[in-house]
Every structure is written in C-alpha cells, then in structure tokens.
Image (cartoon, rainbow over all chains, first blue to last red; front, side, top):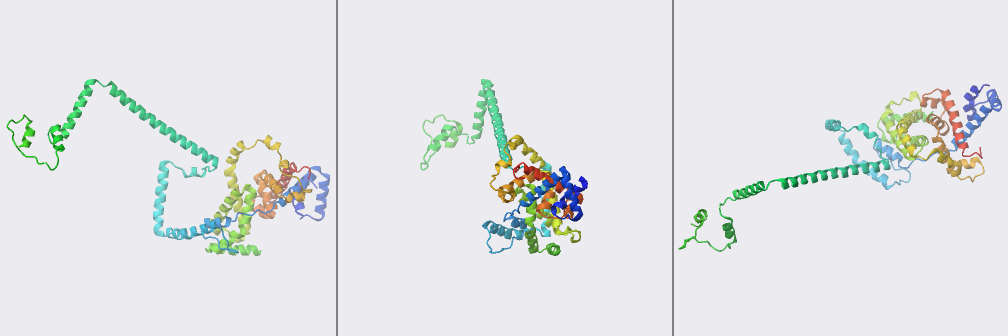
Length: 241
Length: 199
C-alpha cells in the first residue's frame, strides 16, 4: 500500500468502516511507514478529543426570539406552563403589535409606505447618508466610548470657536467706538434726541406733561385767565384755553 | 427516512402558513444549528445571533426547499454553513484589528493551556470529561483553519456522513476525507502541546 492510498483510507479506518484485506494492508502500512503511523495516531487522538465535546444547550429565549423575528407568533406554553416575565412581556408586546402590523399591511397603506420610503431614501441620499455604512457601525463598548469622546470634543471645539468669534466682534465694536471722532458722537446724540422728540406726539413740554401726570385724578382742572398771565408757549396756552 | 418525511410534511405546513408547524420546526432543529454556530464562531453570543439569522433566512426561503434534492437537515446545514462563511468574512478584518490588541504570541506561549488547566485526573478519558478540557478542545478548534474546522464539526460533532458533508461544502468526497484527516491531526497536535504527558 502507498501513502496516498493510506491517506484516502484513513478516515474510514478510524470510523471503523474498513474491514478485511484492506484493513490488514492498511494496518501493515501504518506499522511500516513512520509518517503514516504518526498521522494515524494523531487523527485518532483528534477524533477522540472532538467526540469528548458535548452538546451545548442553547439559551432558553432562543426559540422565542426566533419565532418573534420570523412568524411573529409567540411560543406556545409548554410543560408546566411556567414562563419568565420577560417572555410574557414579549408575548404581550406581540399581541399588541401584531394587529397594528396586519392593518399596516393592507393595500391602501402600501402606497403611503412606498411614498414615505421613497422620500426617506431620497432625503438620505441627498444628505449624503449611506445605509451601507450603517452595516459597519461598530457597537463595541470601546468604539461607543470613543465615538462619545470624539463627539463631545467636536461640540466643545465648536462652542469655543463661536465664543471666540463673538469676542472678536465685541472687541471690534469697542474699537470702532473708541476711534470715532467726538463731533460725530455729538451728532449722533442729537439725532437720538430728535428721534425721541418726534415720538412725542402731544407737542407738550416734558415738564408740563409730568406735572399733569402728577395731578391727582379727582382734582378738576378749570380754565381761567390770571391778571398777569405768564409767558407760556403757545401750545400750552391753547390747551389751557 | 421517516424523519425526512416528517420534515417534508412540516415544511409543507409551514409554507401553507401554519405557525404551529413553524414552531415545531424551530424546536426540532435550533439545537443543531446553535451547536454548529457555537463550535464554528466560538462564542455563545455570536452563535445566538447567527442561529436567529439562519432561521430568518430559512423562513424566507422555505418555499425553495425541494424534498427530492436532499434531506431537510442537509439543506438546513448548507444554509447555516453559508451564513457562517459570510460571518467569517465579515469579521475577518475585525479579528485582524483585535489581534493587534491581543496578547503577543510570546506571552501566550509563556502560559500554555497545560498550565492553565488543572491536571488532577489520572487518564485522558477522565480529563476529556472535565469542563476545562472541553474548553481547551473548543479553544484548539478555533485555531484550525475554517475549512478544516467546518469539516470536523460536521463529521465528528454532527455525525454527518461524507456524502452529505460533500453536498454542504460543495467539494468532492475525497476532499472531505482529506480535510477530516488533516483537521483531526492538526487538532491533536495543538492539544498534544497541552497534554504531552498524556498522549
């Protein structure tokens, strides 16, 4: 027997499906050829190690999760009927969501959903968001922490930039005010006063107005002409008459 | 044969919209799928996610299952294997990145598995039954190449015959046998470093 033939029969020999003359020549070659003998020993050992591995029990919630993600029908109660509060909660949620989903699947809603989907996808493509990138979204705790720090860093940087710009603007304004000639400032003040007077529609002097406002409400004002009338502005006089 | 008939009947009922039949199908096969995923992916959380993905895919493509073309378990295993290959490709880059943060090879060699696993039992059979040994074998299994790993999982853990494995992996039977031999031998070599005194 050649080594190639030995290799081809190795798995069958280990599984015990080799017999008769073939098995005899196989064993003889295993004893004669050192490399093939070692390979046989290693393969047998490997098989026994693998067979030592037992079956792993899947998580209890696996079937429920599969059913919820596929048919949407919750798992039926089994055995003693005991189910965890989480499973009961999930079943309750499905009971609420299922009728809504059934209503949403009606044809009259199909066009609305289609339009909404089209609008959303068009908006996303215009904005530049690619759904393909979301597949590579890294949700490991370390990656999330890193994203958080990067985002907060960007926000702080943006805030600092804005503050800097406002500070510069206020400084420039102060500088302008400081360098403006005194005459122009006076003119400005006068203009300001003029605007205030224009806004006064009564045409009365301020003092008079204040006096009138200081009078008590129950005190009547009578029209009279004193013997020695004081010189008053025409407007005030007209009002008194 | 009876199983094939029952599976075919269940599939027909599922396609007809029988939710109880679908639940029965999931109940029957989820352990098998979970174990394949767990032994291949290496972690319980990945296995759980992958098992759910497998059943979602089966739910969507159940109508494409042809009873005449093979057993339902073979079809199910093929879908599982394809998803595992996709998962392996997706996480390849991640594993490369993680390996930069992992313990260097020198340090890993400095504390071999044999030192981490207590050696109390007198013979290999007793050791093989222990939980720690199971973890060591599982760890060694993860070090095999994906081709060898999937083949020995299907043969030695799922007890599939060569023809079905060849169908699932889409390779000739001779290749399956060769991979099984190499996978078993490679695993033994990895574990021999751990249990030199036993083997």
